[in-house]
Image (tube, rainbow over all chains, first blue to last red; front, side, top):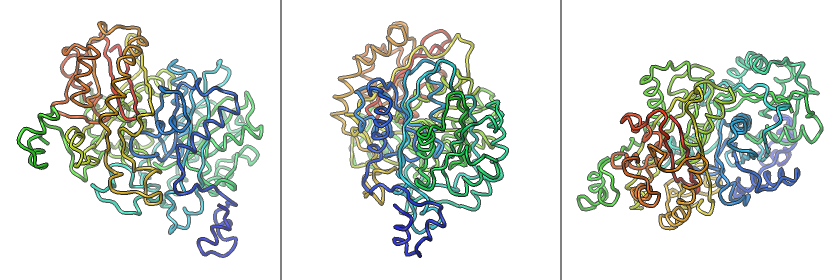
Length: 309
Length: 309
């Protein structure tokens, strides 16, 4: 979905959406496309690229912000769509747009405890299905996508150097979709707008801005590194503004920052692993050179992880 | 909600619901009760009983089958309702009715890796909000509830002896609520019945029956124990029939089995931790005596864990 297509669709002058959003195009699935099939395609792509047999995956973690349906959990639908062997276990992990970071931390614990040997983490979000087209700011930015990582126990020379997540619930309703669970449904009462993504941009920005610098220091501290030690920063591609903040307020040099926003938009939980894939594809992830994943997410959630590839 | 109240509500002869369901009463929240507040009440009850300061909890895992809403994840709402200190992290884990077992395994990995020191796991489900009153079998059995466990790293004398989860996706639509995510919503198309719990009792029973005995053997094997070694079995309280199966087909003696079904019904993901709480309260959990958690869940998911308390 190019920004000029959106100009036409929304009755804006040519160039309006691209100028406002900083996005040339983002991907939108059709209204009946399957989130589970999108996830399964990412899973098989990861397996194929690295010649990993599907039957060697002994756990699937679904790490998306929005579920396929209320019950059962999304991993079931992905296991089915991917045709993984009968019995292969899975579960969902959810921390909205930073679900991939949480899933990485969870997977590391499970690998370390010996519970599993090879874990597939899949993030797939179809944000287009919840866009409120009446809300200019948020309707421009979202793209659909999926990405997968296969993780295994290492030999001790690589791994997680630090991980820090903080939740500030005074921002719990700054980004939300109210329907989908027990709060808004036919019995409790609901309306169509409850199914759409709502964002309170200004208070969200104020809260995130007041926290991000100190949070960033704490994240570096818990990894025992300074910003100079970090070779590559893979941020959640939340918005044009959020990426600018990484550059300016957190002093992340442009050459260290993975920025795929212009051609993907904000892909919700799929953003971080998609950007990570780009970093690998472009040779910007090197063994022994620390890599940071970082994002702000609905909650308000701040989460980051420093990895030694 | 007593079964005789349901007799009246559903126009059945006196005694009909209790005879069919094996339940004397189950709890139903009001249509606008908050799942997050229910979860927070369970969390504070657990903290209070064990004199644990709320600010010593360094992670909250929400382990429910149904979310509060599509975005953000339920842990945010529970952290807020519980008034935990600003910054306390949390995330959701979901494997439908066995979410508590998955969360215990995830927590064990995180404690072992040193990521967290004291983790609260809360399961809270308000199944009454999704009951299809036209479907006799499933409308009798569900109760609402919440339970919480606080887990910490042990000294090596207690912990998880084995854990096994298997998912058989040929049963993915035998228990489901189709709305709530990307599959059924205003944009993809939906109807009111998509918000209700649907169960295909007979094929579900056939599939579960064909798997459960061999699964049970594998679970015992991975824990290195025999059934004789297990002092207490805490099953998911799925149905009268499922508890009878534990007794008869898996040969679990009545005195080892925790059965709270008659006064709680099936509380979805809250069943296992609520039954575990009863086991502790009644002195049926003893240090050094192996304890099994086990359940079948939407997916179809089979999950179990053997713990040394």
